[in-house]
Amino acid sequence: MKIVVDDLSGPEIAEFLDEHLQQMRSVTPLESKHAIDLDELRKPEVTFWSVLDGDTLVGCGAVKRLDAEHVELKSMRTTPARKRDGIASLLLEHIIAEARRMGFTRLSLETGTGEFFLPARKLYEKFGFAYCEPFASYRPDPNSAFMTRTL
Image 1 (cartoon, rainbow, N blue to C red):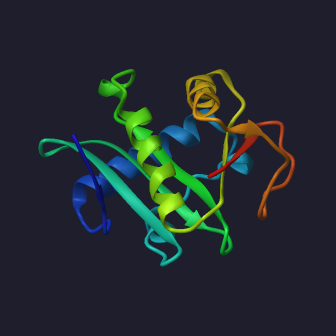
Image 2 (cartoon, helix red, strand yellow):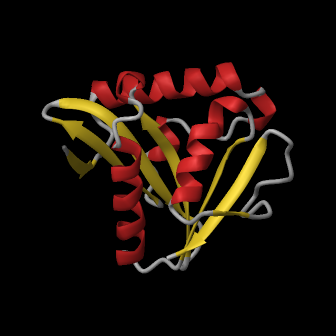
């Protein structure tokens, strides 16, 4: 498996991210959905990675620069057929190392509080993320869990 910076120009990643947005819409009330679309992911403050197994896209994730020291984890997704294969752990380890290499000292995220998001919350806990108050422009929301860790 390899993890590559993706310029988001290919149709496969566009479809993969559209599936992600559709899935988030199906499990999260609209007012609590914070997944960002392809145009937002293409902004200069975002670095996006794809995980490839051979030529097959199996996962993705990104960081969005909030300020000189703080980045937000965005768009973490593993293809449903490959869940529990270690792809998310491999990618999260890579993103943490890359965020540190880029000079950031804090990595934060927002995820859901529902049962669907329990595996994600457990993964983040395993990687040293702790629950925190809303950050950046987020507001308290019973459907959102906020987590952070130092790098």
